[in-house]
Image 1 (tube, rainbow, N blue to C red):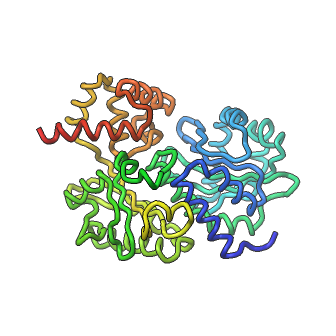
Image 2 (image 1 turned 45 degrees about the horizontal axis):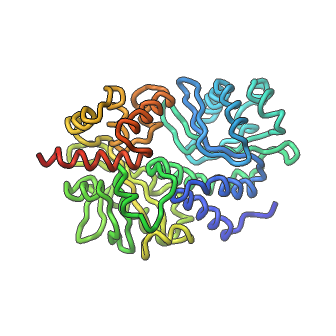
Image 3 (image 1 turned 135 degrees about the horizontal axis):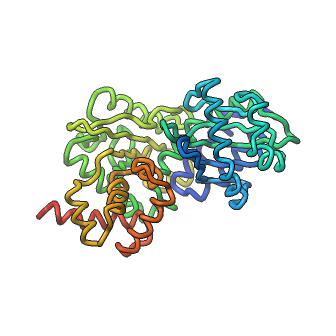
Length: 382
C-alpha cells in the first residue's frame, strides 16, 4: 500500500475529533482508519484486569451479537495483555501487535483464538491503549484478515501517529457522555454537564463557559478567567494548557499527546485534569461556535458538597447505593469510572442509574445532572 500522505493523515485526525461531537460517526471513522491499516474489523473496548470483564464501546464491521460472544473469552484476553506487558511494558500511544508482541504458542492455543478469531479469518491485531489504569485498560483494536497477512511496519507507523488523537477523542467522549452536541443548543447541552467546559478563541479568549466552569471561575480554581482569557493555576499547568490550546489552533495533527490529562489542582489540593479538543478545523466542529479554536474540559475529583447531595437524594428517595453512584457522576466521572471507583460491576451501576432516572423522572444522564444542579443551587443559598 502507498505511504500515508500528510493530507490523508489530517483528514483521519479530523474524523476522529468529529466523533467527540457526534459519537455515531465512530463506525465510519473506524472504517476509514481500517482502510489505511489493511484491517477488516475494529472495536473500542475496556478490559477489567481484576475481574476479567470486557465491555465494548464502539465497533465497525462486527455484529453486536458476535462481540457478545467474545466476552466469553475475556480471561484469555486478559492473559494476552498481561503477557504482553511482562514481555514489553507498553508505552501509552505505542501500538501493540499481537503477532509481534506475544509468542504465538501462547495466544494461538487460547479459546479466544481457536473459537472466535480463527473462524473469522483473523490472523493478527494492531491495537493502542485509550485508557490505562491499574485495574482497567481501554483499547482501540483493528484486526487483519489472513488473506492480507500480518501487520507490517507501515501500519504500526500509521497507528502511532493516530494513537494520541484516538485516545483524546475517547477520553473527551467519556467526559461528554452525550449522543450529539447540537450547535443550536450548545449552551444548554454543555450546562448540563458536571465537567467544566470552556470554549476559547485565539489568544485564549473565552467564548463560552458552562455552569460548572463559571463556578470554577468564581472560586478562581482550578482554572480562571483573567480579563476574559482562560488561565490555569500554577505556572507548569498554565504553560502546558496554553501550549495545547495554541497547538489546537495552529496544528491539530501535531498536537499529539499534549493537552490530554493536563494535571491541575485547586487551592485545597483537590486533583483535577484538563483535556483540550481542537475546534478550528473540520466542517462539523467549526459549526459549534464562530471563531472557536479549542474546547477545554475540566474534571475534578470532588463534586458537589455531600450534604447537599444527601438532601437532594433524600428528596427523590434514593437508596445509599444509588446516592453513591450519583455522587460520582456529579463529580465528573463516567458511569464506567464510577463503577470502578465504587468497586461494583458496571451492570450494577447501570441498574442503579436506571432507578435514579425513574425516581428523578428523567431519561438521560445530562437531564439528571441539570435537574440536580437546579435542586442543589437553592440548598446552597439557604
